[in-house]
Amino acid sequence: MSASLIGKRIVLGVTGSIAAYKAVALLRLLVQAGAEVQVVLTESASRFIAPLTFEVLSGHPVVQDLFAGHQDMKHLSVTEQADLLLVTPCTANTLAKLALGLADNLLGTVALTIQCPLIICPAMDGEMWEHPTVQGHVTGLRGRGVMILEPETGALASGQWGKGRLPDEAVIFEEVCNVLVKGRDLQHERLLISAGPTQEPLDPIRFLSNGSTGKMGYALAEAAIARGAEVVLVSGPTQLKVPRGVSLFPVQTAEDMLRALTAHFHWATTLIMTAAVGDFRPKQALSQKLKKEQWDGAALQLERTPDILLALSAQRTHQRMIGFAAETDHLLEHGQAKLAQKHLDMLVVNQIGGNQSAFGNNTNEVHVLTPHNPPRFMPRQTKRQLAGKILDCMLDLPPVHLAQPTVLHKSHTG
Ligand code: CTP
Image (spheres, rainbow, N blue to C red):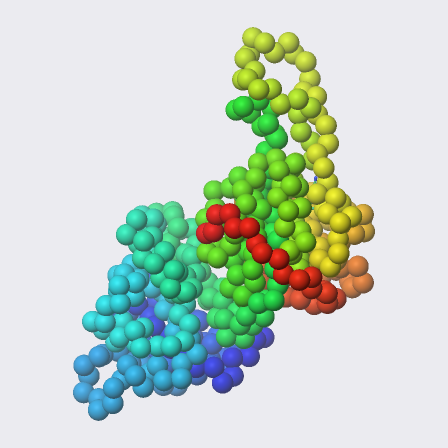
């Protein structure tokens, strides 16, 4: 958390959610990093946290009321030269206002006058977040280039469990730094990312697979897009939403994944293999469902799938190659061996198995291995935070001689 925000002007909009207290902690981080912060409270936000708290921490009077008897055009003076408007926590009500351009309070008016980037961090009940109206507003705002930091899943103020929690202040702070400090430092990068599990069919309804959810690869794709990269995501089956701006190529088997990655390999400046590729597949995939009565007790015959990283490292011209190792034990020893065997520039080693397993969790801790430096440990944090740091490590790798950009064949764009 050492990023400097000296010289950056941030307008922090706070709305009436129980999570408003997290905006206080965030304000402290922003001010400590050197930012000038002007807080705009909605009327209902001031029922959760007194304006005085924000005034003391920011060192500036809080602005709240569109009609309070001030001589200047307050919404214009607040936004003058702002580098960022950050609305956190953002209720469903304010989200709707921002999506529709309603200007019946100071925050809505400010949002219509700013020229700078807008980050919105929604916080609400899970059912509200999933509501098609709210999701429609989210899509509309994203379509206009607004950054929406997805709420997290966990215990909500209502006592329910669901998606709607405001991420911790450290996560939001990092997003702010990505926008204000790192900016678009990946704008010349073309990232080819694989994610999720593969499925190796036994018959039309059964397959061999693993517990990967794809979260790490999708988090990397999202973080890279936010920093200006072009991203092609080749993904096995997952339940995840494709980050906006990412070109998705869905695949099922290891063989499909190899084909899709090979097709984009020459376009890419970096290949990041987060996919949990199945190492074995049934020797014969049956074309019809295997009925119980037909099974004679014979053991399942398996064969090896292609090693995608190995196959692609043989075709490498200019690409950085980054792998992710899944290990249950001897993480560093196994990791070092894979780094060398697969001719990688970097290998991120995860622990799998146990209740802190990398699979399915929203958080993870990893070791980052490179051929010429000592291993770097990254302690437990959200996969979105890790994604940012892994991309930083990628930029520290030796320079890449870029090939001529080729036209990207678009598939589904999220
Ligand atoms: N990988 C790959 N092709 C495979 C298997 C794995 O390209 N058939 C990639 C993974 O995407 C990952 C890296 O290799 O980036 C390491 O994967 P991991 O499953 O940890 O190692 P394996 O090579 O499969 O070795 P083992 O399962 O024996 O540990």
